[in-house]
Length: 323
Ligand code: 5GP
Ligand code: MN
Image (spheres, rainbow, N blue to C red):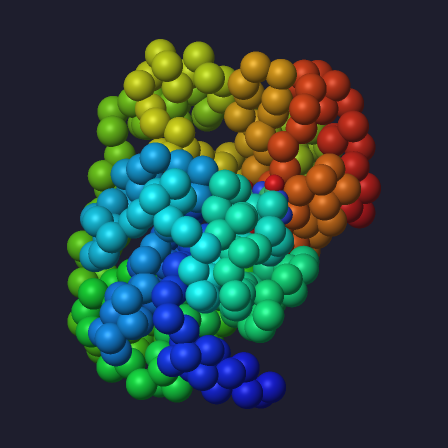
């Protein structure tokens, strides 16, 4: 898995670090939180006092607050630049939000990521675009670190894996991903409990927001492209939390025949866009053209402007990558 010996360099850097902070991208998803906490718990199990940091946020997303170690998260303001910063699931400095200075000013920066557009901005950058999730990459590093994974570590890293593969359904669900999941289960993951915590613990408001998303589904290009949107008012009126909207896009992708789907989150003057491709289309290239990034099948960007102006340029760009 690490043909260049990156795992050995990683382990050496860890062993010689006097302080370690681990962080991931802003608006953290299951892979960001799960891989961060899994690595922090793993490092602590071998006597390294690592701390997870929350970038540009006050609180752990509620969906993932059940994870072991979530109480360890520290705010950026409470930390100083560490000896070693480990950036997970984060393709470039800017995606670290307000944790960026901690990473820039650290004596050493290790990047572990599976985004194909990763800028390799670390002193050591371990990037594997074929990896299902960063959680699985961290799992693969435990042996070299001398960590014997317990159920807590496995639960964090399994949550990263199960969420980033869309519950073992997206194209990144490789035999390797399933073998990794099997060994995580052997380490004690309660699969049913993780499923309930991640997917069956929605608030009434979050379900109402799904209703609004479904009502607004709009099809273009004979249904090959489908999209929907939610506004800040929708969040206020339903009571749904922003952190509960991570999987809203999945409701749109359920549509038969849709090959590209997107969800727009509208707030004053800006539109946050999540793009997904169900077939082979590369939506990552479209996201990059709009200043964002991601994988070919899952990407995102933020557009500064009104929704009509966005659709005028986004729909032609997506139609082009459909062909
Ligand atoms: P989501 O739609 O769930 O927010 O993001 C989907 C994927 O695209 C994730 O891998 C995420 O890291 C990436 N992504 C989303 N927004 C951006 C962005 O603004 N910039 C970059 N570089 N990547 C993004
Ligand atoms: Mn990821």
